[in-house]
Length: 403
Image 1 (cartoon, rainbow, N blue to C red):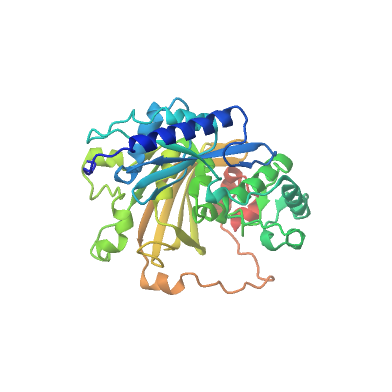
Image 2 (image 1 turned 120 degrees about the vertical axis):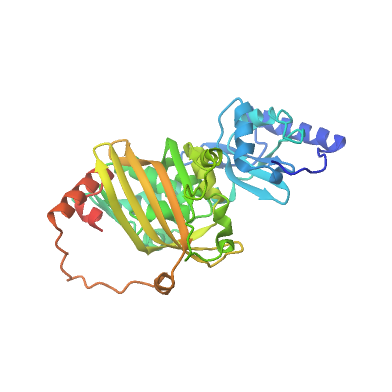
């Protein structure tokens, strides 16, 4: 149930001002005017951004609020950087048509306390996660730099330490792969120029690709990793050896531990459906930093149309009340083929617990350097068969799959 609050709504005089301002901005944008602040995409086309504000929106569940708006909105929209600012809920949308459609939804949603949900639209600078986007001429320099790092004979692309590449540093171009805008540029260059690439330096695009985006300030970049009908759930273990419940407060409210949770309605509610809801849910979880050197990947099953694998590892929280708390996790993924050589996730189960004493001791410790002359371990026939299957499904060559 939604908590009761005092009746709300903008004062009449302010409402009139807001209505006039928003209308003028939207009309100017729809006619191609210069009102509002925009950014440019890789082709140089101008993009306009709008901030959507819901007064007293903090009292609403995010999923309920967004789904209620989407149900009445005449166009589909993707909220960018949804957050709460004091008692307001806010997010961004990219174009004037979407903003105008959202404006029409204002006061058409009634909450359980019989109050109308007000939606205010204002033209805005691009969201913080999209600030400092690369200019077209900078993208060309990145393309040239990447061409020098591509080995056509091996169909391999080395993106290790791309940010400190002398060619980019000399041009004052800052490419940070865990920023959504930079990652999109790199992926677009790969797709348009070297779609045949079979391996990328695992330091940046192998096992770290998903988690570099997950650990960034905005997890919206994970949308492309999920199938339209994807499902996701979170589970916290219960048992005599678990620490007190309050040490995992940020996760318990979303836990779908079926051993503990018997209510079928709640079981269904805590299972996130569709990729938009999945990524919106992931965006609400505490911000993290994963120790990729702790990762262990276990391929559980594979067929020509399905790959099931688990990722085990360690992460720490980087904000909030539990900042610097170290957690252990297991992530069970089920993926299906997408495109020619890619995969997309159809099921994502996340299990989180507090790290053990031994895990704490090893967490975020740099691994000892491995001599280059070390022999490659011999794999059993069964392991080689599984490795070949994983390489075929993931689009990697055998060398990089083994890593």
